[in-house]
Image (tube, rainbow, N blue to C red; front, side, top):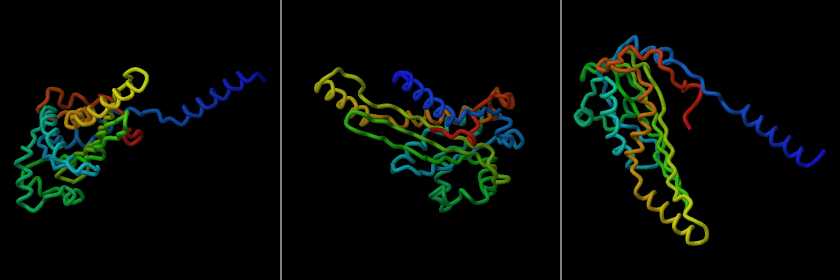
Length: 232
């Protein structure tokens, strides 16, 4: 058998194996994925300080500024983040981890909140070499009911950005130029901007709140079922 034909068969076999190992995204409607949001119909939302699981110590403070406005524009009454954070500190709650697994009825009692938004910063990292750099922001988010403490909605937003200098021509001069551009892009990368992009990935999946024109009209909107396909 000619070597070219053998090579073709090998490539075809490897391609088939690769494709069979891929997971085909499963699409589901908002109503099927998040029925609790449509039955409980939360109107007011209290945003807890982010839980930082990344290696970046400053990620929590940067990310906290990116959530309040998008959720308000999504149709929910959002309690002012800075105010509620100060009140929580006065009650001795400095870390969201302290209340994440506890009954949430007190948030209804103290604030009148129908639901609580928890966010976890999974990644807030830059992978850097001399000529290549990749920035990754990954956020897990969920809304829990203050009536039942059950999860009403849960999704993940991830964004990966290539900060590399690209092709600046051949030779040593091109390599140096690419390294300089990569270093500048990495040093000046605006994590807050990319966090907002990651937010848009998961906020899109949230059923609209009562102060949005599409309230209760988006139940048939389709999205990727997160329990089947995880974000990269």
